[in-house]
Length: 256
Image 1: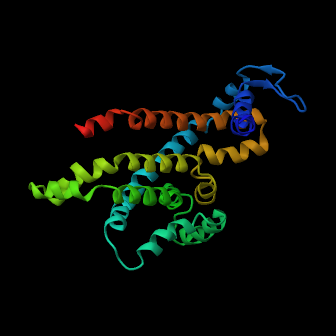
Image 2: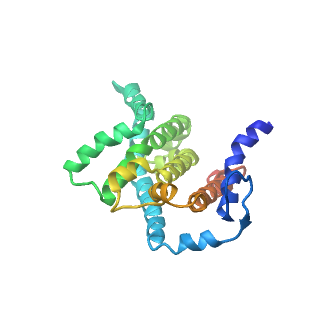
C-alpha cells in the first residue's frame, strides 16, 4: 500500500512542492526556499492568458462536436445490427494501439493539403479524432443497457420515437454520456502532440507551451504550468462526483 501511494502521489506532491519553491538545487530533496517568485514570472508572460484561453476553447469545441458526431453513431451501434458493426467498433481501438505521432504525421499531410495546418479548425479536428474512442465506446455500452421494456411501455401509451428517446433512453444513458464528455474534455485539455504538430505556432495551448518551458526555463515554471492544468481537471472530476455520485441531484430528478 505504501509503495502504491508513493508512486501515485509522490510525483504530485513533488510538483506541488516545486510550484511554490523560490530556489531549488539538486541534490537537495527539498527546495532551499519557498515563495511566489516564479508565479510572478509565469503570470508576467504575455501569451499565458491566450494559451490558457485556447486550451479551454479547444477542449470545449472538441467535446461539443465529438458529442454531435459520436452520440448518434453510438446509438446506432448499440441498437442496430449491421454488417461490419464489430469491426467498425473495434477500429476505434486501433488508433490507440500504437504511438500516435505516426498517425498525426499522416493526418498532418492531409491537413496541409486542406490548408488546415496552423488553424483552430485543424486543432479541434485532431482532438476529436484523438478522443472519439471515449465518446463512442462508453455511450454505446450505456445505450445497450437501457431497458427496452421501458421504451416499449412509453411507446404503448402514445409517446413517439423522439419523446421516448428524450424522456426514457437519454436520461438513462446520461451519466455515462457525461463521463464520456468528461474524458473527452480532459483529454483535449491535456493533448499536446497533435496540437503541437497541427496548430503550432499559430494555436498555442498550455500543453504545447510546456514543451518550450521544460527545455528553456527552471523546473519550477514547468511545475506551475502543470498545476494550472491539473486544477481544472480536479474541479471537473469533483463536479461530476457531486452531480453523479450517490443520491445525486440529477439521479433524483430523473427518478421523479
